[in-house]
Image (cartoon, rainbow, N blue to C red):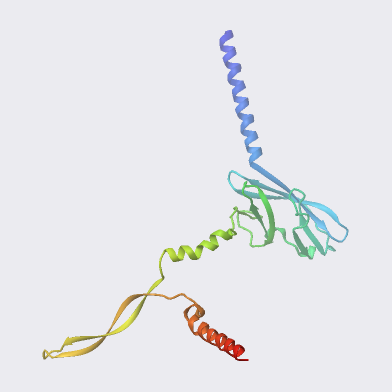
Length: 228
């Protein structure tokens, strides 16, 4: 092997090592690990329950449970983690002796950045192929209310610009037709017609019946004052 071949060989080894290290770093950054503990509320002692691994690229989770033995006299327990905010005790359990962690299902709730935001645990039938199932819930944006007062003020104007509201109604109509003998007879038929709907309130429709009596009584009162 001459000098040029040796240099090429060393360069290939360096590139291969760089590619392997970069792949390893990508795999590491794509995995989010959450350490889960079990807290005994009677004496506030803590034991490791396991690790919850979430693969961001595949959106899959796996819970690796530790070999923890729960004392038979344990009554009140809680599951928590220090890796997430406000998750010191996010699930409470009663009766430690009868707890079956093989039937627990872990629920992961993601945020906009595809990171774990919230955890939950509930009782579900474990999958046949997975000892402890992990359910991943993607981020969903909630409906945002319209807090712009200008748009709400302009809504009636836009409705007026679009024209009055119309609806189809059935009306009866009398027409003149000829019978079998050729005589003209009057017949009542029904037909569908499109009419404008009056959306005004009762006051808007009948304001004259309110205003005219008020004006009359006001004028009558003024005349009585002048007579006195």
